[in-house]
Amino acid sequence: MTTLKIIDIGHPTLRVVGDEVPVDEIKSSAVQNFIDQLIATKREAKGAGIAANQVDNTRRIFVVEVGNNPRYPYKPAYPLCVMINPKITFLSEERFENFEGCLSIPNLRGVVHRCPHIRVQGYNRDAEAVDFEVKGISAGTFQHEDDHLNGVLFTDIIKDPTTLCTWEEFSLRYEDAFRESVEQVVAKYGS
Image 1 (tube, rainbow, N blue to C red):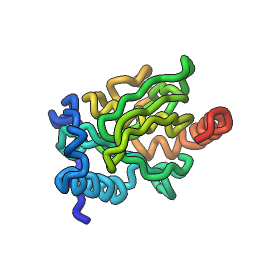
Image 2: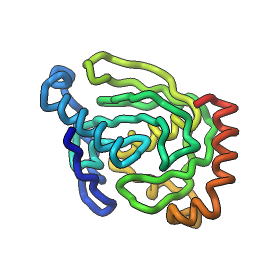
Image 3: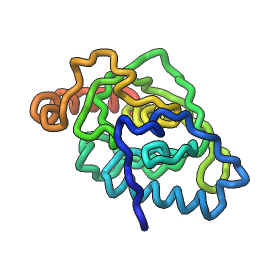
């Protein structure tokens, strides 16, 4: 499968609010091929998720999938999920600190506050309406990808810019403590 070029911070498409995909077009070969390429791109880049904006496309589509990912060895597994025209609703007033990275912001990480319990509505790749809840660290991944579809990058919503660091510094100085934090979030909310 052909992969797509991931664009970097500064590219104007990352700041575009995505366009709704007409439901009657979801099963079209153009949309299905794009979804396949988006999945292949995410997997090749070893991302936990990827949104259409990140490959210079303005459709409201993102994918999430976590397996044995060397970029995120502490993230719980999450099966492949394709979301089209997603709507996310927060189901908790609580927030947790999530040390995030992004395929479009290479070699940078920082702490973002995320809701640990969300409702996700939209369509899957079969044009079926879906409505489900996501908890814990995985809820943060869904929020990160949905932010992309609204032209928002994780660097826009960092509460404390002093948490920004390179991947090497994260691995050296912060990863062990963050793993413990992830374990606490998973123990409290599930994946």
